[in-house]
Image (cartoon, rainbow, N blue to C red):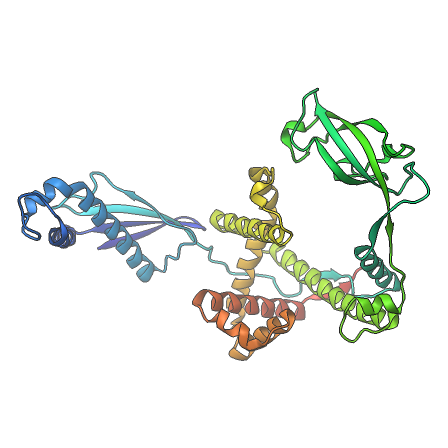
Length: 433
């Protein structure tokens, strides 16, 4: 088998393969022999049909299967001999006249590959950071969020006229260009009598309306609205006020703190301390993430290179799958949403490109600096993951025994080590307040 590898671009190669006639003949003989043992043809006992009869009935099928095997084998030998590692399924092109019993078989395969990088100037990177800090205002904001989450809507007593800040239960029916549209009609919907996004349920127009009365509300639809058919139009809603509610927020005291069920928290003071600790941990993680992002962007600014389109598409797929999982946890199905996936993929492309370029550059720095995580480093990461998820490390280890999971773990630890290396050799200054 003759193999020649051509470089089309830093991220694409073309593998030209020629299989000699003798090997083609042997593969065809093997295929027809296997076919003969299982083929059932009228007038012949199993395994007794002659070759020429098999060729008459099954030639196209056999030659197609043999061609596929030879392409797979040829590309496999190219990978082994020339180190051609594809990052996407290879695309084969069989040369005319295709597979012939007494002639060499020629084909080519185009593959996307990782670029060969020689990273430069990755030491002495200049990065700014916002140091982790916890303020009383942050703690108060967390407390407010907790109280809001545990608040309840209660009927308004003593009045039946809507006021700013009320929650209103309404029936509504809408039209666009005089025609009803999906989602325009609903009963018993709770909206807020306050300024805000109309399509998120804010109806300031209801202020002053009496329970049982109706009004008409008009609203221009934004050009980027999720429902494409409504973009740029004006919708008109007939709204009937059914009831008024107000939000009852629990008192901020020791009883509130105990009721949260946080281990070790029995008082408001202990709750504040617990929140402060969690905010501090979050702030430290935020600082690390921002510094790491800055390091990667600064290194990329000094290293320009092309990336395989397939890796960018794969990164976008991963982002979309992550979004779908988050929606599923909230009881929603992303497939049932009126989303413009083509537009969404386009919006994610720049972020995905940055992610892929960063990963490739960190990998190249690891190779240049011979950064390889040891077994102790992997064990430390497993322990960290276990603690983060509140489960014993023994339950995490079995999930990482597969080759793919193990490789992902090693890659994550190696990236962290490379980022630590870059930080140790960088000039990191606090950003102006």
